[in-house]
Each structure stands twice: as structure tokens, then as C-alpha cells.
Image 1 (cartoon, helix red, strand yellow):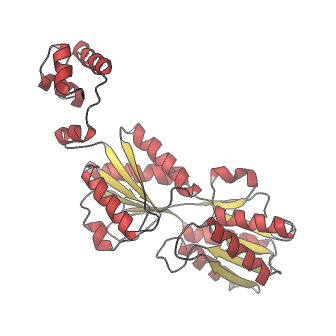
Image 2: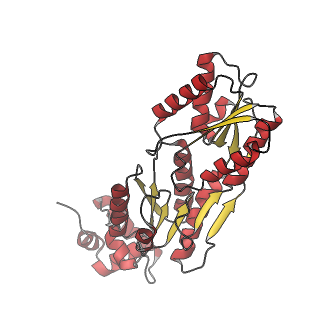
Image 3: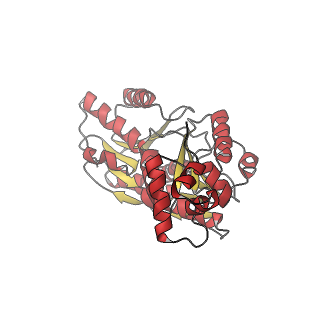
Length: 324
């Protein structure tokens, strides 16, 4: 039989209301009484319902996070920082994986609302702007610009594209490829592509652009994309990959073909994923920790009724290592 709050009250010899006040830290209570209630809960193995407590407090101290694919190292890393910072501020995290499915994303939003989260961080964007506006909860968008009225945080994608492309040009690359996610998607990351084109068109170099399909982060497809690129463009001597995971496939393909990096092919990635440091990859480093912490900070400010910036663009930096 499940232990109830009434059992705890009888164990301590106080009213249910008193136990409830201890659980929700309401009103003056002596430290000795708090300790007795906590000891009784531990002895009886009583776990209060977070939803019930949130109804009393009118606040759950939970936030939702919806991402397109948690298996991608960038999203895994940013989730780590979001959870850690939220926990420091007294909040728990509910994590949802949309996998770019509109129906799934909508169902997760409904679940988060039913769970009475205090706000949501959106790293996925499959629905219409009106769908997001109708959520009626504090909302922050991460690495996505949903609308001009919803705050978003991103790195400087355009400047990152400039830094990466200029480096390959300085290294005397004459045939350069840009690899990216699907450019039909309305993502801020497309600015990396825009910067690449602007830089190469100013120079007397050959260039090509290759993109993945619309279905997101399929690593086997990355392998096929890179393999076909080198088959069709064997003269390639420079590659700017719009993610470190794409760059990793380029390095693997160069090893298969016996193409020396950086002697014959120079490679630049994007993200600065900590887990790939062993690859000695030249990359554009996003401030992933700062992005995650600001997303939580802005969400908590909204929850408290405070204004937040609608647009936050954080600087990136070039980390030149062994692949260039």
C-alpha cells in the first residue's frame, strides 16, 4: 500500500497541513520540526508528487527542453550545460527528442504543458510560428529563430563561415567544397553557407556545395555524401564542413583514399565538440556552454516576469589544429 502524506503526519504527530508546509517551505517552521518530517519521510520511503506540489506552489521548478536529435554530440553537449545550470538554479529538466517530426514535437509540447513545466527551451523547429506562440509559456529558442517575438540565442554563424573559408583560401586551396545540412530548412546555420559563397566568389578558385537530405542527422548518409564528393571531385584540396561530425567523415574518407591531411586536403569543421578533440580537427568553436546557460537564464527571467533580449548572437572563434 502506497505511503501517503497522512501517514507521515501521523508518524510525526502533526497535521497534514504542517507536513505540506514543510514540503513546500511555506511559513515559519522550526528546524527541528523540519528534520522530524524529513526523517519520517525517509523512514517511510515517502516521495511527494511533484505535480501536486507544483499545484500548491503554482510553480513546478521544472523546465522542458526539446531537441531534434540528442544523439548528435552538439546537442548532447549543450544539454549537459543546460541541465547543470538549471540544477544550480533549483530547476529540473524534462528532455524531449523530436527527431524532426512535427507530430512528435507537438505531442511533447502538450506533455510538457500537462506536466506544468515553468517554461520551454526549443532547439527544434518543425511547427508554424502560431503554434509556438500559442504555447502560452515562457519560451527561448536555441540555435533557431522561430519568430521576431520569441527570444533566441545563437552563435555568429556568418562570421564562423567567413573565418573557416578565409583560412582555406590563405592555405592556398584551389578547389574547395562546402558540406552542410539541408539548405532548404529555415535554419540560422545557412548563414555559414552564405559566408562561404561570398568569400569564394571573390577569388579565382573552384568550389562546390553539397548538402544532406531533409531528414536530419543520419551518419550513414554523411558517409555516402562524402564518398561521392571525392569520387566526383578528386582534385579537392580543401573542405569546409558545417559540423564537426561531417568533418569527421571527411577525415575518414581521406584515410581510406590515402589522401594526406593537411598535406593534400585541408579540413575545417564547425561546432568545437569536446569529444572530437582527439581528431586534432581545425574547427570553428561555438560557445556551447554559454549558449546553454543563457538559454536557462533568459527562461528564468521570463518566468520571473523580467524582460530579455529578443536576439542574442554570441561570437565564435577559429581553433586551428592539425587538419589545416
